[in-house]
Length: 206
Image (cartoon, rainbow, N blue to C red; front, side):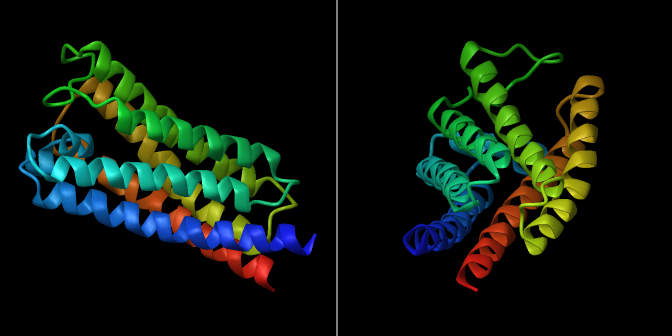
């Protein structure tokens, strides 16, 4: 049991490190790369013809690893959020492997390629998995109080942002509003992942 607890502490610490590293790499790629600026999708940093595209993909892979490590760091009783986080890791990895075409077009106002649909679908599924994991943690009495509180704050911020993004993309399409909302949602999920990793490490350590 002690060895299992130690493994979870190590996994939580590694998840925090991967979250920070992934967020920094993606941020650098988005800000420094020759992307479309504040009106474009974050994913566009991974398809531009520059050295920052590699940094973007490395960042996405680090975030995928962070989600898997978070799933490992959760207690055995938290199987549902653990499965959701593992699924989110797979979808995040897929979104990094399958890149979208220039502009990352999405329906209904643009004509996407198969790769665009796969990339966009994987990105949406990854975010949905993380948000559902937050909700599962909120409802689970087996989760530590700090983990539940963090999940409650994350879900309270992520749910309305996700709804507004979906509605805006269906009614307005690409634009500055979607870009800002997407960045806010990604910031919330990354912040939740980091805070949860820290909370899990402290809970197991104590």
